[in-house]
Image (cartoon, rainbow over all chains, first blue to last red; front, side, top):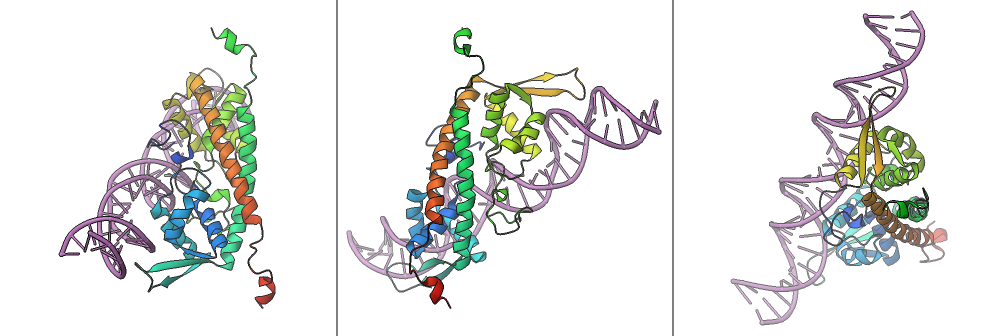
Length: 139
Length: 139
DNA sequence: ATGGCATAGATGCAAAATACACCTAGTGAT
DNA sequence: ATCACTAGGTGTATTTTGCATCTATGCCAT
């Protein structure tokens, strides 16, 4: 649907690259990574996220920070500044209790969605089955 | 992520209602319905789509027509006007060969995505496993 | 005949989301 | 002092979305 063509798979291919960051389900993956790591910074996430992402589409750095601030605004993560180490200050994020529940909700939603998609894929991949000899007759 | 609250599930719940129509994967479902039915109108689709949708989020009528025109612009469906029946003219859509292939590509993509999501859901639903007694100790 | 209703296919537009480039600031190496 | 690297962002033009609205045809009861 997006007018922009995907640089990786060319145009007209429905790769998940052709979806926005929301489509790429950045939020749930951030929540899961935070739970797994205990705590980490946006910069850490930006490097880990691609590996754990639900799609192979590139995940934008800007999107991660925006998702983190959104999550914090909703009370799903908390953050504190860590100064004194090498380089600039880091903001360390941590999952709140609400965030853990939010992650559980995402798991439910994505579990359902996974089943729907798997059903869809099975059905769509099955042969059309309308006129067995269509390939022969279409000269 | 969307600021708007979901009228069905309330706010802060990550239901698929909180996703846009692109997120709801309207395009692949339209392609599949067209293949199953042979041909049908946008209006037909608007009534069938909800039943076959990948998510339980409401699918907008306007979005369907937009998706259909996009698909036609890309050569994935063709249409012709059917006048003379009862009521206003109907535009009858049909899958092209390119459209069938496009559907197959969607099936691949959603098949992969389904697996990622299922893996995610399993991992996210598993207990956090950091400090067995956290529930007891948190007074 | 005519007003209301169902069908059918859209379009208009404000608001939200997105992509991509750009900005600030600290540290250490050259 | 200049550069590169880390870290955390912001600005903004463009797209996409949600919701309301519009046009038009035919049917039916009044």
